[in-house]
Image (cartoon, rainbow, N blue to C red; front, side, top):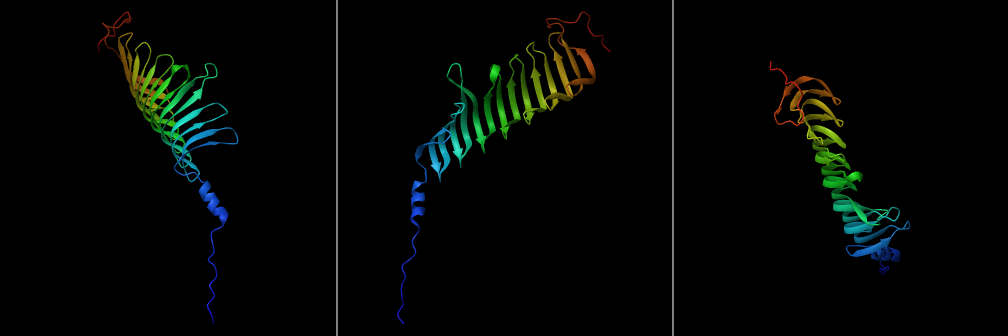
Length: 217
């Protein structure tokens, strides 16, 4: 009986068209239905590599690294000022899975600024925060609030050094009243000093010392 050879099945044509249409490696500019725009590198129809994303709704822009469709690596995020029509940088630093992660700098309204570590989009780890009133906190952060050990310096140079929890003074700590030349050392709970000792500290150099020095024990 003769052997009949059937023609080999070929790949459907639409598979070939789909493969050719996929953006891979090269830089392309793509507009979404909602007006968003991306210009950069691709991998299998996903943003991957270097690229710039512009959101039409608020004019925000991200320029930096992408990984499988998400911001991942180093990049900066800026928003458009509605008054000046100029871009204002909001964050510059590292990203992971579309969120701030690693070291980065964030610029807040009222000239506030944070420099330090992030995790999952929240301030976590070591960081320094500059507040609008001239205060500055430097130390450990946990879930976007001071937590651990840190130092808060006030505009008048008074400062607190010690423990923090949920953004409040908590645990052993020292408060230096540089304006009065005194030092309080004790225990805090939710921003309230519970017990401790107050001593004169640098009284001679203090700009506004108390009328009478604290008697020595």
